[in-house]
Length: 200
Ligand SMILES: Nc1ncnc2c1ncn2[C@@H]1O[C@H](COP(=O)(O)OP(=O)(O)OP(=O)(O)O)[C@@H](O)[C@H]1O
Ligand SMILES: [Mg+2]
View 1: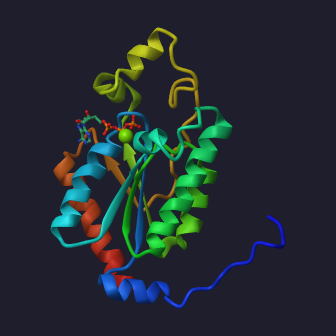
View 2: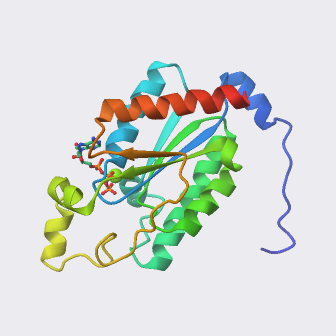
């Protein structure tokens, strides 16, 4: 960055925006293997939060790769850049006072930690590990990726030919082999309500 680029301070604060919206900003970060259920849960949760009158926005891995991140592939470097950009966007939305639902595999711990830091730390960030074993994910395979992988058509397939670093201390673990979508949402909503009432 050159010294010609200087932060231009505004006259409206984060607190001003939250006051107008009647809520705090929050990033809910879903991580987990392919087909573990991240998008399915985020879509239903978004609907519930809208019903509760919350301002919410969903950032989905596949959707973002259609636009903002269309230029990135699946190498370690590109995956890190994919998440880095999303972490920045999520932090901006959070700063706007929104509840942001982020569903990306996000396999590497260091970049998930970066996203947490960007969002302002533990008060503004809920990491949800959407957990399912690889056999269950392979059986679900809604996009046919496991089938493609068997034919050798996928490079760096997370959980198979590329690593997935399991979260060690997420705020919540949702085991989608045991919980229904409805039960998962109930658990996340409880945590959101607790988090927002603590920091309003
Ligand atoms: N309890 C459950 N919770 C969530 N999804 C479930 C559950 N049981 C079955 N499923 C099914 O598992 C699939 C999960 O697919 P989904 O696209 O949500 O996964 P994802 O984690 O977003 O994967 P990707 O990383 O490829 O985007 C869906 O077909 C969904 O209907
Ligand atoms: Mg998804």
